[in-house]
Structures are given as structure tokens and as C-alpha cells.
Image 1 (cartoon, rainbow, N blue to C red):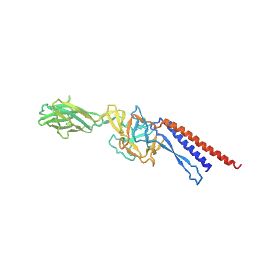
Image 2: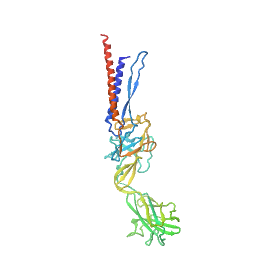
Image 3: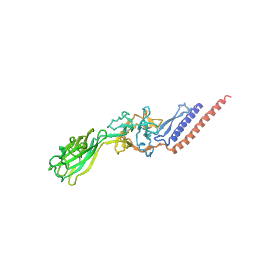
Image 4: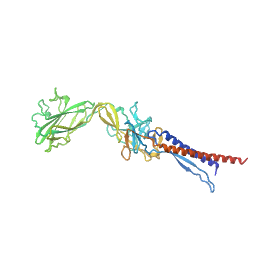
Length: 419
């Protein structure tokens, strides 16, 4: 047995315990850090081969691992942009250089300089822009991801493209003879009239006059005619200066059910889009004329009042007029072995050969967790366990120092044999 080997073994023991104390110090310091994953030192023995009747002391090797796959408890906040993940997965963020990382630290706020959502470490949240449809997600990379930015969502207008106009028409109404709204003459007569508001490409309101005229009792038929109210004659009504935006005849059976297929009106809004108005559910029954469900999409320009983030990662922009529009979809990334990810400053992680490659998907799908808005994931540090570990490491460090001290004293004895 070599006395120098004893010294080296004692030094390796002290080094290992120093590493353990370092992880304990980091864990205690970051016990209140959002999304922090505790570090731990794992020891492995390194044995030296000795001859018969002779033992050569080895060493101890410390490997640092992080409990990245272990979820911390959730703490709820009053900010809707604070995000936590309940279950598996990581947010995709990027640094100032555009390098992508993974993180569980979701304390996001709006960056006043550019409108991006950034967390407390300055990393920008990435997502898919769905305001114009599905951008196409990539399962094994970060393609098509852009910063979740709210500045371009302010003062947004949406043109109308579809609506619902479900009413009950009175079955006892008198059949109209002579000119009807479809003829657009001054003496045109009708049975019922309602007006609805739609929006053009600039978000300007366009009021539509919808005329419903009973033209036949058996079989029961009603004429629908839609005009732009701005084209009405002075004082309102007929004749309109422009032709009807849409005219159609709707038929009903003996039970008052609409039988015309398709049960809809298609019209082009001035300076707007083509709008389809669904009449499904319209009836002709004994009661009086009764609007049941009248709704049209689109909205006038409005300022952004806030955001709402759903558990599936959809980011909705909320406007001052009560309108809401889907703007982004936040994906979640995972890897086969999260504990083998490489940690970096700012509670972010990058892949390693041991962690496996990125797998990107949407929240609540394929085993991924859901996003919790108004919550933050706390560190998974157990303070009591860390303090206990610190005491044990301190004792073990002292014991290893005694081994080194004893080996040094024996070397002194050996050196004094020559005297």
C-alpha cells in the first residue's frame, strides 16, 4: 500500500464532499427561484488493482446531476402572463443572440422595448403565430417559432366573414302580393324586417337591412332580401340606390321546418369580405316574429386590454370592446431523458447526447402537460433535506481530512527512519 495513495484518496474524498457542499449551497441559495431544479452530487468509487497481499487505495468520483424531471409545487399569482406547466414539458425560449433553450421558469412579462414576452432572466417566449391560420408545427425542431409579441395585436380590426340569423317567422302572416323587397321599388311591401351590423376590411360598421316577406302559404315560402342601409332612400326604405346584396326564397314544410338547402345567404360586404349568413334553425310557427340567435363575427378597431392564455397554450388577445382573438399557440418541448439536459444560467437547459433530441408538440397532447396561467412553478428544493445533507457532507469532509492528516504523519515517520 502506498502512503501517497492514501493522500490522494483523502484528497479525492475532500474534493467530492466539496462538490456536494457546492450543490447544497446552490440549492439553498435558489430555494425561492422560480423553476429551479435542485442539483445533487452522486458518488462513484474508483478502485485501483493491487497485487496479492497488497492493497492500493483508489478514489471517489463525483458526478453532478439535476432533478430536472421532478416537478416543483405551483404558486398562484395575479398575473395572467405568469405561466406554469402541470406535467411534462418545457417552454421554448431564446436568448438575445437567438439561441433556443428549454425552461420551466414562466414568470413572463411584456418587454416594453419591443412587446415580446420575456421571463425574469431575459429569455423570450417562443410560439406559433395562429392569427392567420395554422402555421404548421415541426415535431423535432424549432422551425416556424417566433417570439410571442403583443405589440402588433393593438388596434386590430377583423372583417366579418360569417354570421347566424335564426328567427321564428309567424305562420299566420298574410301573403304579400304585388312588389316585394326583391323588386326594390317604392311600393315594395314586406312582412318582417330586422337590421344587423357587420364589419368591412377596415373595421367600419356596415348596417344591413334584412327583409323577410311571405310570398306563398301553400307551400309556405318566404323571400329574403338584404340591402346596405346606407343605400336606403331619404328617410329610409325603398327604393335603395343599389341592388340587393342578396335575395333568396326559403321554403318550409307542414311542421314549420326550413327545407331549403343550403339554409344560408351569401353576400359581399361593401369594402369587405364575402359573408355567409347561416339560417339553420329558422322556423315558421304560430307565435309572432321572434329573433332567436343573431350573431356575426368581426369587430371594429379596439385597443388591447390584456391577454388570456388557455391550458392548451392558445394566447388570446382581449380588446377594449369585449372582442377576443386567438393570436399565438405556445408549444411544449420534451426530451427522452430530462435529467440529462445541460443546465445554463437563467434556469434554462439545452440538449446533450444523453438527454436525446427535442420533441416538440402542443400542450395536453401526447403525454405533455397543460399550461396553467396565473401560476409559477417553485423550485423543487427541500430545505430540510439540504440542511441534513450539509451536516453529513461536513462530517465526511472532516473524516477525509483526518485520513489525509494521518497519511501525512506516517510519511513523516517514514522520513525520520533515515535519521
